[in-house]
Picture 1 (cartoon, rainbow, N blue to C red):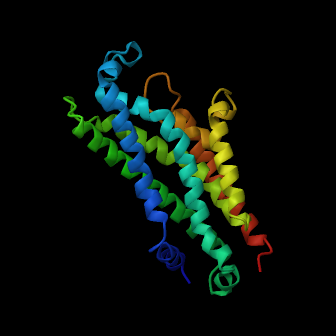
Picture 2 (picture 1 turned 180 degrees about the horizontal axis):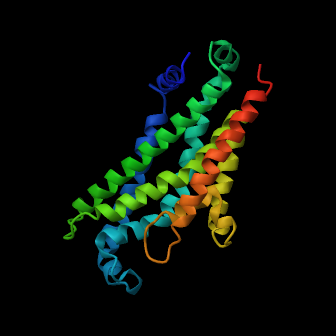
Length: 245
């Protein structure tokens, strides 16, 4: 069985699940909260000294920054847990691994599915923020370059988060364990961000993905490009040698 066939099987498993409510509904809820926040306080925000030069679209990112940096890693945590839940809840690992498919293909396919679903959530947020600006009737044209960089930094930054949460969700039969660890790391991310070294920790990187002045955007780039593939390979090796059946 090819890697593509395994991936399509994983996609099919999520066809009628709650995954789509999380991946689509979650970012839209965040966009709605930003709409309420900016809509109510727009006059104050646009004249606030610290927002000078940001413009309306930059203000949206400034208000979104901490909210999304907290909920995005939690979203990845839940996506990973849902992707793995069926195998554990139905004791389906034995059947899956008895098929003519390598463990590496199984592990990579689930990782890739989690990553694509995370990217879909980022895209939905992107569209949601665009709609928010149009509803609020911003006079400036949409900041494509600013928001494109934000999406790119997120796309790189989440690689490490996906690799960690994927391995945790594949490792523990009790789904509460990886979720609890992921939420704890997401909460601690705000504290990790105060440290120069810990600010490169994967769950922290979304905080640094906002392409505004004085924000070190190298964090999500280097953390994602190094931690993502490295942790994927290590997790794949551990999964290959694990006694599952």
